[in-house]
Amino acid sequence: MLCRLSVRWLQPRSALQLRGLGPPVVPAPTGGAKPSALPLWAVASVSAVGPSGAGGWYEALATSAPVQGAEDVLLFAHTASGLPWWGSILLTTVALRGAVTLPLAAYQHYILAKVENLQPEIKSIARHLNQDVAVRANQLGWSKRAARLTYLKTMRRLVSELYVRDNCHPFKATVLVWIQLPMWIFVSVALRNFSTGATHSEAGFSVQEQLATGGVLWFPDLTALDSTWILPVSIGVINLLIVEIFALQKVGMSRFQTYITYFVRAVSVLMIPIAATVPSSIVLYWLCSSLMGLSQNLLLRSPRFRQLCRIPLTKSDSDTPYKDLFAAFYAKFISRK
Image (cartoon, rainbow, N blue to C red; front, side, top):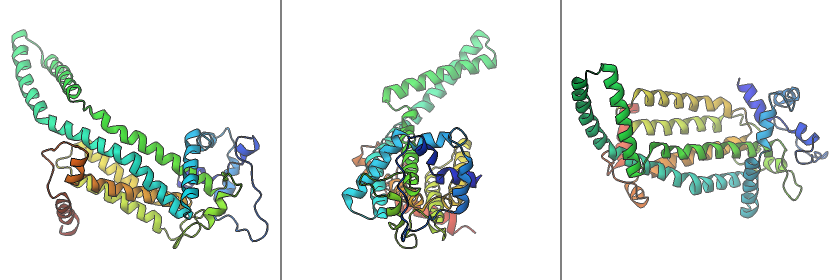
């Protein structure tokens, strides 16, 4: 399964280029050119995937307008900053996270805080409505099923009215996911296009060649895989840390929330072998994005920052969130016998 995933990440777009849908192919230099750092199995196996076969949907995505927009953003950041490609990827990630996802995350916390502050009123309404429905059912001889359905229907309507009154429907808190996930996919696919030589800069120079020397430390070639597995493992650790921070701040999670937490933990672990099969440029972006996500989560726990964003105070807020987080983390993972 992982091999098939990695093939879709790494397959060249020669089929598109032959049909005139992709950029022209620049012949590889014949002098001291560096051979492709991608594994032979990844290059050879994609030849069996035709444009109308299993790879068709991915080729359509790779040439879509959002992906081309992400490519333009990356090229602009690289040209304007003059940084090497590893720095340009880092700069682009920080800029996108700071300008797009941080405000949306603050809005998400704003909505969730208002919903939390409505819970005492919702519980009071539920208690009184339960009594009223019980009296009514006794007077009219309703069955238990009819009384239950009446209670649920009326309660749903009253809660919806509260959400409309305070303009805090919980669905609004999901806006972050609908923006962040597509953006993550588009930038990842754009970097894949760069790493496989499918995109070239306006000056005619191969971005793939630039990426091949645009790395740093133990990954100087951003088109190659990270054979040390340091970047993939780091992604898994950071993502698990984000999940645990979320779990520690939730007291008395529902069964559904518990299942979701276990699912996200499994995805975080699964990302490690997946990240080991894609070019280092993509893995570096994923790692930077995860680090920004962790920083964003910690920042949104700050009382001063929440006040700056006008996030309402809730009963669960703490004056010492970081101290409480460290104490909870220590109690769960370190002092536990």
